[in-house]
Length: 294
Image 1 (cartoon, rainbow, N blue to C red):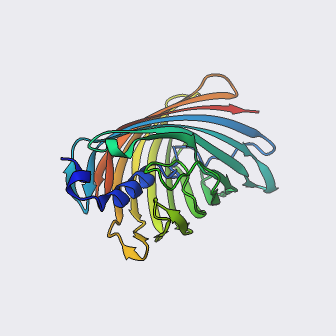
Image 2: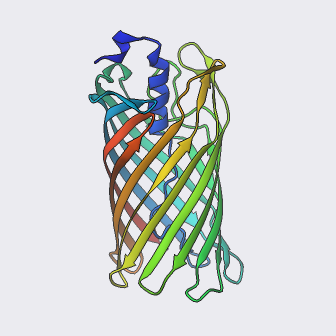
């Protein structure tokens, strides 16, 4: 079924759904909120590949051939600054670059290559005086509208709007082998005053995400983890018209992290969406991460 021949008004909705699918959700991985040594820096390179084929509107599947492939790389730099005993701040910058390609019933969306919006953050991390030194963190991030954007294109890596995200995290160490990483965040979006070829205004309500991962240290160099998360909210309006497109997505992830050397780490993560209310459903995701500590 081709949604464009059935109802051209879906074009704006589908473009928005595509934007939501690549809008740089700030997922954590197990161990992300463990503090770096004071004064240390880390340079991380990510590669993310995802395949989407099912498309949902208001909880109903409207196509099983609405295909979107995303290949995104991210370069991330982090530096740790000591503020007090057991308290650090880790200023960081994240720059995405990627390629999106639509096919099947989604072929009219085309493809695009470019940079995503620059993300600037400064997580503050406390090591608590608990039996196994639990971690609590509060992390503000700002998405700067520097990414590739063309209002005439259905697919864009940049969002052409400011975004602020506040993420809280807690790591409970049960013992030397087991830990539970949890995080919750909220995003607030500025308006996009140049949305679609008509140049209308897109507004979006707050979006929420919850994540949890149970991890186990197989050895001092290797750990495994499994868990997932849920994304809710983010309803939009275009030119003042409510799009009735509230997000409610549940996903699962498994990962393995290994220290190749004392300062070089490799992580492999796989996952998929379990349930989707609105937009694309990821049938498969593969994330690779290489981190250098110096």
